Length: 349
Image (cartoon, rainbow, N blue to C red; front, top):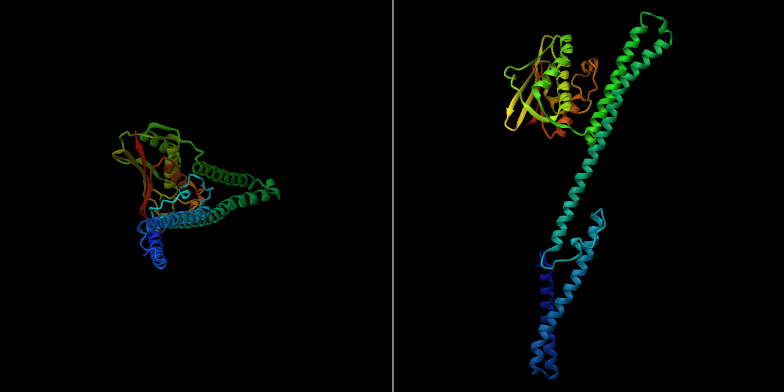
């Protein structure tokens, strides 16, 4: 009956019980002493008893509930409960305990979510440390092998000295690339990299990137070109150098995983307030099971080939972070042996 009652309802119920019992006892006492005809006392007594009972019950209920609520808040709140906290006063007309129960339940759910997040980050950190250790170990081991060979007499052998030095230098460049990419991701995640938003022509920037990577594509017997219909100029608002890096990483990725005699085509699509930029190739593609992980750090679909071609394994992770910093989206569509298409949006100027 009192399960979902407010403190005021409980106090009224208790006052009614006390008044009823007290009035009966009072009436019996008056009858016993022969003073039952004192009508004024008989009329005043129940109201007085009811008022006193209600006031005392409310007082003790408010203090009891307040102490309990304060103890609960001390437990669930990280900061000290101030005098202005809602727990300092008790609204007797509301089911305060039900409200506190809900708040404790919400707090418990929040704690569970935080614990799950911490576990996820701990697992991610363990995996990340393992990945970076593995990525750094290979070039360091190679450099160590080449240098020891040279120190053990290889320097005097004209057939291998220059070749080994060139290989050692190539592995140093790979180490440098990994460290630079890690630094870039760190700046993006911590917000240290401030985007310099400006208006520029995305087609013009794309042409610059294609010219920059044309020689590398020609070495792999690949063609870089704009899609038919992509001759229209679109002005967008973004950090130009960051978007250049996005385009370079995506086009370079398409070259690494392209097929001999294949092509990489870039297109632009008007989406009202945004411009969709797509980088499509007809290379080896990405198997379906790998698609959810292509933007993960150090994730490689073809480990042997990507390491042979160089790179840090962080290119697509950097691309994703840059697009998130712009509050834009990036996605990938791919079919094994048919090719891949990466698309990202930019705000139209």
